[in-house]
Structure formats: structure tokens, C-alpha cells
Image (cartoon, rainbow, N blue to C red; front, side):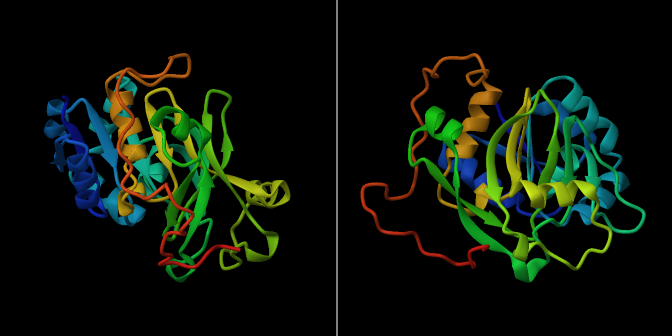
Length: 256
């Protein structure tokens, strides 16, 4: 099976490599442009997006990352990685940050607030459940999380989340009209796919549920597509108990 690269500048790259290992897939750390030549797909993990951007610029990774995306190789960004892959990001620090781009969407960098406003939530994921089996929901872990406010016509929405108006963060005075539109609509997008690009605003690598990793691996193998029938590969084993109604332990508050 092809080797999956994991950008290892900062953030939860070790957790992604561990999740891949549970599926029998080798993940390798990527820190230099030339290392991208040895992998057929790439995960950009969660972390601190500004720090990751500065390190990527220091190591001259942006040209190689953009070329990787443009070549049509599968790339998955989680949390900060989603911000990296967006064509446009709002709510950034003064001066902004460089983006890899490729994903036709607008992301708000800290839509759900600061670190202390991190939360967990059960997300309806019909596409994931259809391809990978398991529960119809996925336990999303949102840590200082972004959200997609606007997506282009070729972007497939895989998960969204209702946003109560009284819990929208109010600490960012630069919020634009797109965020106001998200409030009016009552939902923001938190998982998408556009061709070879997968993006999640939450952290699947911090859970025992490996279905998103399995989904991405099948993207890498060409076994998942909008027009494709069910893959011949068996659904990934989900390391959670779906035979009882017992609720999973909640380590973070519920956003409400």
C-alpha cells in the first residue's frame, strides 16, 4: 500500500501517524520539500496555523505543497490543515498568513472561539457512514476550531454543524458579512471534499474512530469518488462500541 505523508512541522502529526498505523498503513513525517516526492498522499494536521505557516515558509515548503495539490495527489487538512488548504481565510492575525490553497472555500480561522471554548459534538456524517460503515454520526473534537463559511459549487459538503446565535464568539471585532450569513443560516460547514482534497475542521486523529482515515486512504487508492459505487475494500474497523446505547465519555463541553 502507498505511503502516506504527514506534514510534521507542528501539531498533531504523531496522532495521525498512529491512526494510520492502526489501519495497517505506513505514515511518514514530512518536513522538507524533497520528502514529498516519496509519498503519494499527504495529511496536513491540526496545530497552530500561523506557526505552521511560518515554519513552512522557513523550510520553503509552500511551492512544493502547492505543486503537490495541483498534481491531483490526495491531500487532507484537519483544523489548521483545513485553513492551509482554503483559497481564502478570514479572522487571521494582523498581516495574515500564507495559504497553500486549492480548496474553493472561505474559512474563518477561529470561528468557534479561543482554546477554552473547545468542545465535542456528534456530527451527522451520512457520506462517511455510507462508505465506511459504523454509526451515522462522528464524534467531532473542535479545538480552537475554524469553520467553512462559504464553499464553491464543486465542493461536496460532508458535515455541517448548527450554530446557536447566542454562542457565536464575540471576541473578534473583524468578523465579516460571511460570518453574519452563517449565523442567519444556523449552520456552518465543518467537513468537505473537492476532488483530491479533503478538509475537516475537527480532529479525527484524536479519537479512536478511524473512519475518516480509512476514507482518505481509499481516496489515495482511487476507491472513493462521487460517482463510484461501494468500494471493494472492507469498511475500516471502528474502535468504538456501536452495539449499545451507552454514550461515549465526554472530555470537552458540548457547544450549545
